[in-house]
Figure 1 (cartoon, rainbow, N blue to C red):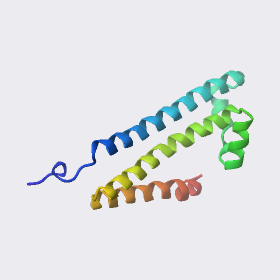
Figure 2: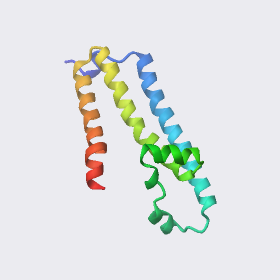
Figure 3: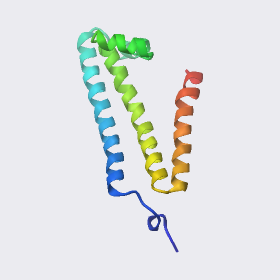
Length: 133
């Protein structure tokens, strides 16, 4: 009886690279989010928790030009937006690298599963997200 562990596996180098992507993406997003949130709260001490949530400062930075302009101006809400985008992009990038390594490693079934997950992730973000907003 064979188990999935008996089949082809990713070489250690590729596995470490995919793990590094997750760690770097998570670390980057956490630094941006925590740092941006602290500076935003210092800049807006009059906002209570409920007001800060109702205010939703990142909406104007969800577009590319708004984000670039906000970052150039040093706006902390733009930094928060960048942190959220990094947080969302991390699993997408991880799945993309998984697909690449599985495909080039000859693991056809895993490549198909990973591609399906990637398509569902992108569909949820690009299609369902705007519909449900």
